[in-house]
Image (cartoon, rainbow, N blue to C red; front, side):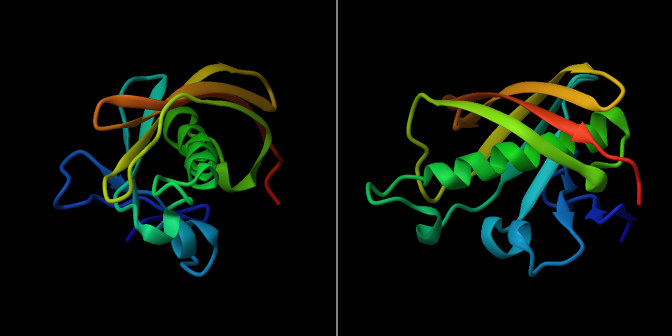
Length: 152
């Protein structure tokens, strides 16, 4: 098992080309709420983070994926982008802002992806944008900013 700054990124045998994307403490939010997440780099500017299983406890009153889960997946994709695309210390970064437009409903029981693109990196800031997709359909678009903090 390889451990990088609080994140575990190991090959996923039943998903060739994908790596696990989890934090080392499974009791914290990512593992306790989101479940199994995997990631892969799609280009030198884009990473895809997949939430493999969406379950009833991820749902809203309409029986679709709760918007808070979608927002969490977006936020998690920011740190995957910082790690995989910028080779920066994702564990020492914080989200400054997220702007999200929900454009469709994601269904429970199917994987959902956040596709995150790095638009620009400055000394301390990373500007990102992307989409949330399920089964080829966009369910949200987003933009956000992450601040890289000095290592402790």
